[in-house]
Amino acid sequence: MTDAVIAGIGESKIGKVPEMTTLGLIVDASLKAIEDAGLTAHDIDGIILHPAFHMSPRYHIIVSETLGIYVKTLADTEMAGGASYGLALERAKQAVESGLCKNVLLVGGEKLATGHLSGSAMMASVGAHNLDWEYPYGATIPSYYGLLAQRYFHETGATEADLAEIAVMVRRHASRNPLATYRDEITVDDVLNSPVISSPLHRLDCSLVSDGATAYVVSARGASKDPKREVEFLGIGQAQSYYHMGQLAEGSMDGKHDLVRTVVDIAGDRAFGQAGISRDDVDVAMIYDSFTITVAVQLEDLGFAERGGAGAFVREHGDLGGKLPINTHGGLLSFAHPGASGGMMSFAEAVRQLRGEAQGRQVDDAEIALVTSASAVASNFTVSILGASRA
Amino acid sequence: MGKIHRPLPTITPDHERFWQAAKAHRMELQKCDRCGRFWYYPGPVCHYCSSREFTWTPVSGNGTIYSYSVLERAKGNPFEGDVPIAIVLVRLEEGPVMMSNLVDYQPDDLRIDAPVTVTYEDVDEQVTLPVFRPAA
Image (cartoon, rainbow over all chains, first blue to last red; front, side, top):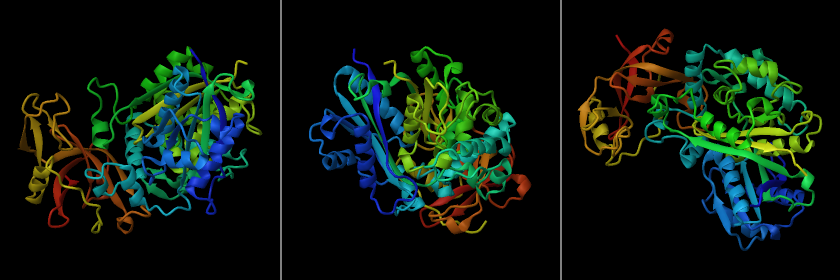
């Protein structure tokens, strides 16, 4: 069987980019990824798009037409919010390994900072969330995560200060990344003193609102111009539970999962099982950080931190030189968050780390990276374990 | 809490009965004829046992707070000017957990496991929303 690898990555300009359209950002990231892999647009025979909030479900065709990719044997738009790109990566890997495609382009982009999408339009277009049974009560996306965080505090004894540790650490990483939106280091008090958006979450517990696009190319091993820069798939898992917060709270029939005990453990167990490694083998982790609470439940449910201990874990182990450096580019919290495709930047960063190209923030001898994606109030997860090239 | 500019639900045949009851300031939920459980939100099948046989049944409207979040900033949403809004997940004594608002409350009332009881907000001709207040 052919083995698939991540052959190329590309990122557009991020932050506030009023001079470019969403399509322009997507094209820019795509061409950079294709070039990074040593390929041309004509080598691409598969495309999976992670749509912006307002896009047509056939936007992948528009992108193909713009890039000049006439024939594809895989072409689709993955509409699963923040988990899309992890789901799509597994599909792309399978397409290459089965011989369906040679080179699959995965791309997503969005203009949240300088676009024209109001909060309500965004909520409606992504169904975020239940428009009949939740939105009429005035719940916004931070409210859903606020409900999660409040219950998490109740069940674990963790506090707002514990969550703040996560924002502080991610910002410290961002301070080393010249491309990050926010680079000034912050303290726990800064987080706690920032305005409450939806209690108990403060502004600095929440991710950014940005413009930007990211792309990568999944190819057969050895297909790129430099096999030493190809990144290996070691394991991928996914799991999804429910969506409506009440349904999540009621939990699974077997009582193993509920609002604060997420199904990311299922995705993680599958990924670790395929990779044949333990938690201690992971050198660097990109944990989806839409909110600080999103990171906390994942670290605990994946078995990295003990229950209620995510904040202390990140403070003690999350920095460069620590046991598990987290979100070394600065994450959605401090680097950028251009909508549903924002977490794709985590994969790009993992690839840089595994290639040894994360200038100024390189994790020494990084050979194994773990990347998660999450959406729908911490109910839809993917866990990917990537490895440095064996070439 | 002032009047909230609420985005309105779309009433469909799957849950028309729920809204009719709310209009009359009653809460009725579907109770499964096979396994006897109540479910929320209303829909065409019991998600515990897949039975499509059910009976709309009055519930007490009493429950406890499972979690809460007070929305302070809501830029771009129709209720932007109506904050703070207390959003609660209420575990009804019949079992299901619903999202709603807590109204007419003191700060001490907003805590997990606090008892609450249903009240109603008449929003327009069609829609009356069940919301909750601290239990007496």
